[in-house]
View 1 (cartoon, rainbow, N blue to C red):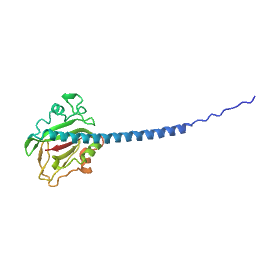
View 2: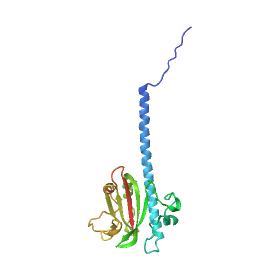
View 3: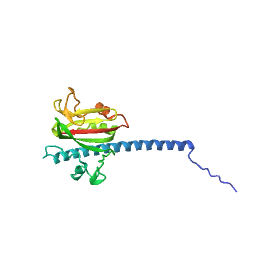
View 4: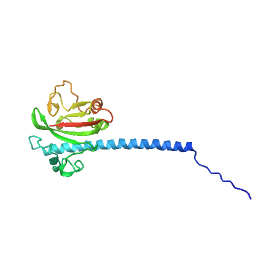
Length: 211
């Protein structure tokens, strides 16, 4: 009787390690690509959200002399300025939340030392890269009511203005006359945005001031 020997073929350990390495590289690249895509999506969503919010606020208060009441979260929810997506707890709206998981603040501002003549929209808890993208957006000019845009991180703060030096810019808690003879103008340039938004991993904020 003749013995028939079968020869088994398979992959060596080196080949398996090579396959696993390739899978690992592809996985890392896929995760990085997904992360970048999500960040861009959230930036776009935030931009649309802010533009809609500002338009609705200016429409709501168009017949009023001031923006008194814009800081009341429950009122902003009941009038549709804040949506269910922003206010997860409904009409109470204790913590308005932006697409990046940070908070949204609406505050009234002084203009020419007159209270409540302007308002500010602040998006907190932004990643530095998203902060830079939002800072460099073309948010409009002074004809749209925009006064200034401020970006801030734990280390720095940079403000760019929507108008010439004789009109207002964002001050601390108010809108005051410009004193800088060479103010930064909008849209904010990359170097200023990067300085104000801080390094990677920073929790940054973007504030838009309107009158």
